[in-house]
Length: 387
Ligand code: ADP
Ligand code: MG
Image 1: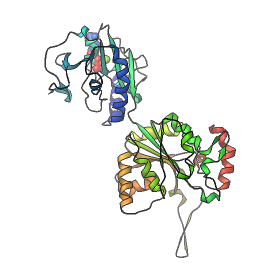
Image 2: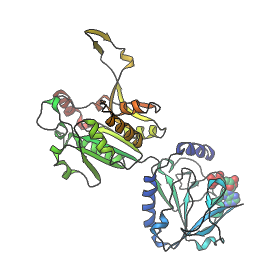
Image 3: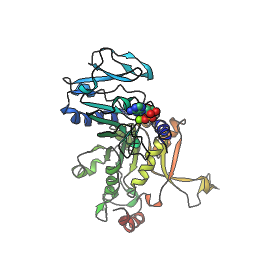
Image 4: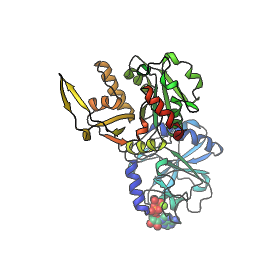
């Protein structure tokens, strides 16, 4: 793709999505890097750009400069109390004297996309290219991870960045449900604690989530408090409630990201590829449901009358089930208030927020839930593929 196509694509992927979690994470990373500079060029965020202005709170003694755009851009010192005036491109600008470019030791630059050669793509006006031509200081690009390292041919004049800091467009939490009882297996022990290969059942999904999501909340049973000690430090936990629905609410309350995936730890064979597919769909603002086609014929029994359902219209709902955290919380709270019981997560959202589409992702049959003793035997035959 050429630069124009990449730019159009990148801006449409970015859309109006904004994540404060991403802003905060990038500001944290930035604050270490800029510690050695005293004069720093920053930017006022436009639209869905990552907001780095909080960096000023971390360093009250450093000097910061914001751009103003006329024929070309130039930078003016900005202190937190200073007024900003509305300017073109829906940005805000400080007022005052223009600073000499080379007295600014480091520029933090917003990027629309970045090439594999670490060159920046902007909005197509070339302001930064011209302003920073022959600049000898340090250039830091800020970019969404999904738009970094793209395969396009940059031009010689495109700014080459010294360092790139990236954050996810979508910050993603996972609630891992571990508070099941395993009643249907007639076992004393919670089935997710059963040994499977070299690990326990729940550790398969936990290990995949540790590699793929930004935050994990395990919902555990009070009876299995021992698990807490074995959880990695960066994993949060809470206790399950009387029903699955209560357990999910307890988990949802701890989520700090905009999107969340809910997964049954009794489905050990989840994959990184499946989670990557889910992330792509969430970008389109849909709910996402992992599922599989129905191979059996299902009959409905109604007042002793049998009705055979059309198998082609039936799907089996699996987990993960994913969506926007606030929408899920709103739906669960409404269900709680109205005392309504549902058997899975997205059916609650479908009921209270029918305006949101659900995207189906057909997963491997291996994503089955260990429910019966036979399922456990099957898992024992399969674990090597997922170790
Ligand atoms: P952006 O960097 O904002 O994505 P482009 O790289 O597409 O924008 O550049 C926009 C225009 O600016 C191009 O027509 C390019 O020729 C011009 N330009 C960029 N850098 C320079 C430079 N150093 N001197 C003169 N013109 C430049
Ligand atoms: Mg350019």
